[in-house]
Image 1 (spheres, rainbow, N blue to C red):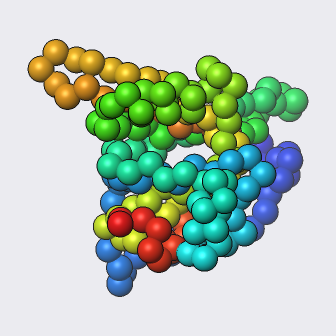
Image 2 (image 1 turned 60 degrees about the vertical axis):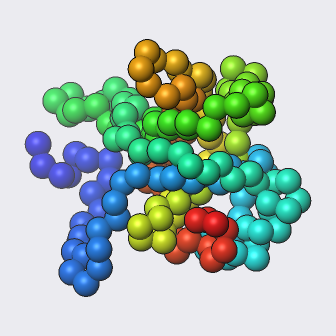
Length: 180
């Protein structure tokens, strides 16, 4: 069957190749979590971000290892014979490891864990090598906890989870917030 049977057949979008810049490399050492209802209007605005932190509407976690994983599609059954199921949304995750194990952080992770019903309004993931952030602008949850493995450093380990049709948007990192 041709495109005439598709629900939407819109114009194609061209890719832009990064010729003059370094690629965005994948390990995130810092994450800024936002309280629900307190997302920034401009994630690159250091004054706005600093005000959210000062007001207690955002908290910065440092010295992490965070990797954004490939999304998992959520499908809906096709209503047209012979057509594949459609993708209606994506479940998205980012794996995290935090080696900052101490009693204060045990309490913090216990409080932040989604098993307590805790959700975040979103997050900024900081890419230090490129001075960029990925902005998760939808409700996010944190799952996981302490992980002790023989002959390894104790750590917190788990995932950030969110649902979104689109990838997190890429912004310049707000000056003076990360990497301090």
